[in-house]
Length: 429
Ligand code: EPZ
Image (cartoon, rainbow, N blue to C red; front, top):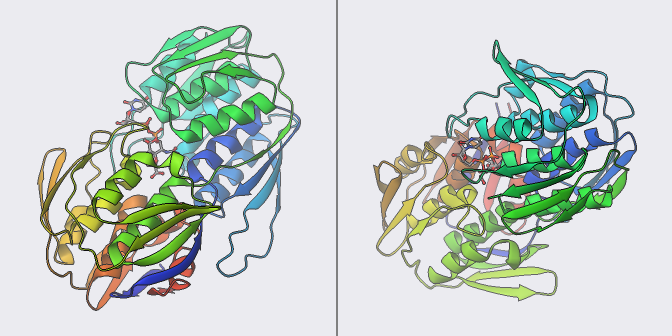
């Protein structure tokens, strides 16, 4: 298994290219099931999760061709996927696939809309929580599907197809909102989704569905109104930049100190996280093509945050912000309100000398003068990158094991960081 070796203490300078958003690329790949025409997706990130989902979709009958361009050092060239689901050859998503790639559970809605049936394995829990799917099933039932659970599978039927309805989510869910949107776009009648998630990735998928022929209003708000169609066409869509990658790199620079331009980053996708970062003493300014992040000598101010659905502070940046706070000049508090077990990084940060105390959903971080490098273990995608941030700040060598977690969500991370002066390398095998 690959490991990543970091020698901490380097200030960073230069440019980091931001890739296309993983959490838009995944549902956009799944949207290809909704049409027999070709769906072309540009600026796709070269990530393990994206490649795996494309392979899983092949089982359902989605042919895909990747127009890869040779990656140049420090220049992000997104990949172009041409996807065609001429016929759906299998409406079952098996356990061994869904358990590896939980977003593949999201094929439920398009398979139901296109074929009137689907048998999809329940995804099960993961490191950060139990990850239930009850809201997904609520949405499918509202759109007219009969849902049974049998031997760990969701067995869904809509022999006459889905039909529009009102869906009122009792809590905000990104995945369930994607499911409702995908299902409502290929069905008869109008659907209104109340308490919809407002993450930018949902807006990106909605804009793609509009290009495919769906009529969608209220993008960016918590009420979406969709006029479904009985057929959707092919389209070409460019994936929006990854706000979590951009926010992560901004926190890297805040942690190490330096002056870096995040090429392609968009402030509007990251307002709350940038506000918190600026309060810690980091400067964030807009450039014509991205964001410039500067921290020159100013100490790290302790700032407390609470994760919330968009536009609040993103849960996917919580571990990264905690790594930054380990070296703040004082005490900060981080409350995780989205997932019930998203503090797996705490015990690993403690191995580097961080002083963090947990009380239920709240972590209290007492800034320390210095972190010391040590071997640590990645446990989930965003926790693993928080260890990279801490390692870049620590004195001496940090070795991060199980970096396959990193590869799921960060494209060429060590290349992008070392191009800006970080002493970081991947040790394969
Ligand atoms: C999406 O996961 C993202 N994944 C997650 O990013 C992200 O952390 C999360 O949204 C929140 O922003 C993708 O987009 C592929 P939710 P999702 O449904 O859809 C509960 C990453 O690191 N819930 O918004 O699974 C759930 O348990 C990943 O890139 C139900 O109770 O998240 C959680 O407490 C990690 N019932 C809360 O809602 C349901 O049916 C929010 O979950 C569904 C969810």
